[in-house]
Structure formats: C-alpha cells, structure tokens
Length: 328
Image (tube, rainbow, N blue to C red; front, side, top):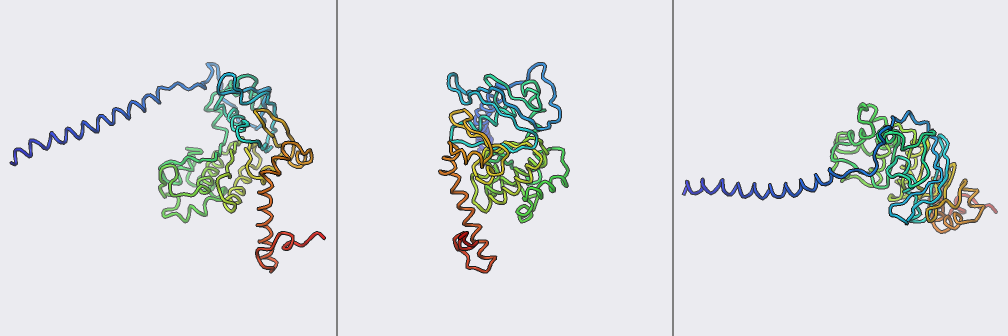
C-alpha cells in the first residue's frame, strides 16, 4: 500500500501541474498579444527632447476624430498664457476630454496643430513631453504598494522627505497619518480601502511632486461629497498656483475663478470668456449654468448660511438671508 501511494502521488502532482501550465499558457498568450500591439502614436524619426515648459499652449484650427467622417472636434482655436486657468464646460459628448487629451498627445489631431511654447507637440518625444505635464483624472489608479511609493510615482527619483512634503501640500497627510502604518501602509489593488476623495488627494500629491508647469484636471471633484470637494478644491488651488491649468469643470467654484471659460457643444467652441461675461451674454453658458451649476451655488450658500448662523450664535439651519441678514 505504501508503494502504491508513493507511485500515485507524483502522478497526481503532475496532473495538477499540467492544469496550471495550461492556464498559464492561456494567460501568457493574452499578455503577449497585448505587448505586441503597436501604439498608434509614435515619435517621429527626427523628434527632439522637449525643453523645459513655460506653459503657453496654442491650438490652431484643430480637427480631431476617432472614426472617419465622425468629427469630435471641429475648427478649435485657443490660446492659454502661462499661469492661466482654462475651464472647459459643455454637455456630455461635446469633446471636452478629447480636447485636453491632444495636449499630452494621447491622440493626434487630424488637421491643425497643438503647440506648447511655440513647439508642435508632434516634433518632440512623447516621454519628454508627458514628463512635464501633470494629470489628475476622475478615476485615480493606485498600485498595490505602500502610500509612499504610490505618491513617488509622480517623480520616481524623489526622496522620502519630498514625497511627504508633497502630501502635506495636497492636504493628504491628515488621513495618511491615521492609516495603520502611515506612509508605509500597503494599499490594495486600485487603492482598495481608501475613499474616492482620499485617492484623489494622492493623485494631487503626485502632480505636486512632479512639479509640472502644465496641468490637466479632468473633473477631479465630480465623484465626491461636498465636504470632501472643499478639501480637494483647496489642494487643487495650491497645485494650480503659477501653472497653466486646463480644467474640465464640473463644479461652479472652479469655473468662477477661471481666467477663461470655453463652452463646447458638438465639438466646437461656441462661447468663451470669463464667468461673469458669459452669464451677462445669456447664451448657451447661461442656460447651462441655470440648469446645472446654480444648484451647486445654492448648496454652497445654504452651507455657508448654516456655518454663519452657528458662528453668530444663531440657531444652525437658518436660510442664508436669515443667517447673514436681509439686504432689505
């Protein structure tokens, strides 16, 4: 019986190994198929390194599409001076994300040009271009590693002190220090265990650490509650100081302070100007504001009224007019 067991055991192990091997072969084929895909966006043979960016961005007569005969952007012209904040608003499918994706050359224009500091983005290497652009998306990708390394992804050669300083600037140190092992806490895949707002603050810390002169913020506060939004907004204001920023706007607070608001509809810029100017024009932006953004302003006013009432000794929960005093 002992000999029979010793004879059967290796055979059973071989059958298990064979099953695992077949599974590994199938997975390997998918991985290699992905690795063999040639990127559609490549560097030109004569591409040069992008010099340090100052932050002037120019789009000239830009047309872009994903499918033939289905244009996403049509005849787009804009100029952003260094340090300006450009807010981009419009209905779903208007081409907002496509417009900002052209700047780091995630896609190429069909015609026209995208230039940074007068240099066409197609004339420089992708690595040297994207290294100088900070991106904060609506859905932040975090790795299964500790918090310190996840922030360091913004600049791999940064020291621990620089990473911690970036987290403090982004207002992320408050929740990080409450984690079981602080900055050494290992996160789950895609940041499992952190809230949406906490993941966004880590993404902002990454961008601060990278110290990019050009920023792209794609609805960075659209999936969080009002309290978390204020915290993220404060971190974004620190991040955008002195940097050229393109903000796909979802909240009123960002639009109100922008140097220029671009209103997109069906792939075209139909209105542009400051928030107050566009409201006074009573065009498409005014309609969009009345239907969507006014709700945010009313929410901020109510929240402000409650805080004012508490500070002044009045009962919390009063309407803004009652808490702050009527104009009459």
